[in-house]
Each structure stands twice: as C-alpha cells, then as structure tokens.
Image 1 (cartoon, rainbow, N blue to C red):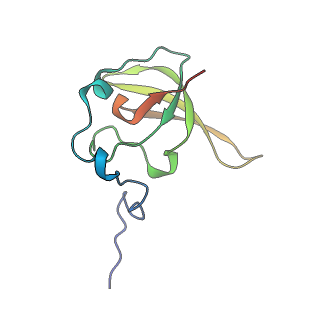
Image 2 (cartoon, rainbow, N blue to C red):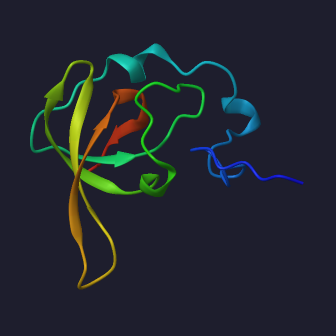
Length: 101
C-alpha cells in the first residue's frame, strides 16, 4: 500500500486532542498577544491549520522576536548538542502559550 508523505504524516498521537478538548479552540487563544523577549511554549492546536509549525517543533520553548502580520516570530534552537542551529519560526498565537516564570 502506498504511503503518505505529507506534512502531517506520523502525527496520529501528537496532533490529536483529548475527548473533552475536541472542537473549536477558544477565541482567547487566537487574540492573545506577546511582547518581544517573552518565552513561549509551542503547543500545536490541530483544529487550526493556519500558522501551524512543523511537528518537530511541538513541545519546544522559544523566544518571541517580533510580529509579522497575525503571526509571531519565534526563535528556537534546533538540533543536538554541538550542532545547534537557531531557527526563526512564524507561528500564529493559537499554537503558543506563555511560559510561567
């Protein structure tokens, strides 16, 4: 049987919600704002497809650098020790939550 090679492959567990969380996400998540320098967690909301980062970044923590349109520019270090790369991601606020101090 042919395999799918799409962007959401191998995400059955990672991009699924629990029973009580299913449906549309609350509007508060879409209108939240962050300031440059804030630390944020990347938690992908599978019910919102726009502004969704790659599944590799789910669960990572990054720093807000700026804003571009409705999305935020997040700086994340990606890779293993010794070969770390700093990447900039453009993520909508539905997929972000503020890190508690």
